[in-house]
Length: 344
Image (tube, rainbow, N blue to C red):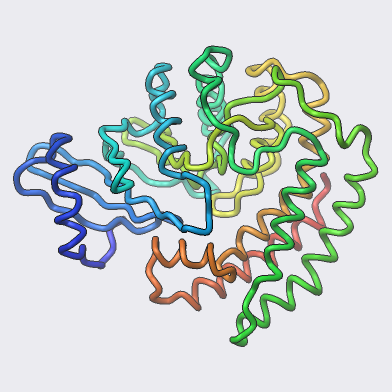
């Protein structure tokens, strides 16, 4: 979906040489695309072709190289013959730009998600991991917030919860968010964390053979249904090696295009078969689900924490920011309610 924002002349001047070098010469129409949560995204079009240009956000306080991670992951995918993503056409490390084929499609609605669409997601993960034992796969980084023990998972969510202490209380909305964290989210997290901490072998590390290559932040919110009725997956800025249980939990916890839990047992069974995972995977994925529902509540509240708020404003603009934050707070309330009521 295009938005009404104009493209600054200095940005057009900065990206034109890159576009020309990658086949977009002559008269180029550049239009912002709405929907990016972390970066700025543009449709670029000439008389001959259409592409998607991505300008990556970088915060000096965040050491993660989102541009470098996504570039390495896309290059691995396409060298490995995986074609369920947009095709990468070019990269500019100095300007932090990526250029891709434009996928003419739309996101699924939650009510449209079927066993067939879940199956396409599983096929993508299986294809991605076909080459995970080769040398090129070994060069890929750990996923952002990679976890290889239950203790790692607990520490990851604990850090997310602790970061919410940084919510600024200068506005009524900020104070409301801070009160929700203190009086509801933290209490729920203590209960979930205590239950997981008492489980068996919380510190036991996951063997390398039981790890997987993960797109991270994986779900239908980062997929488009193309005109050929096949899904194309994208956004791999946090990708890398991780626990497949975390991949499964994120898939069912992400709130933008939620996946009904009736698909979960089949998803876990087919993922275990495709990746040759042991029986411990099932128990771990089910036990961790409440922790990841709390984690996603924290993610929804990122809008209130300065570093993440700056990234959202970079991608979406500061206009209507309060409305956006109010919406995220309400989603976090609803998500926490479901987490505490769900039968895991």
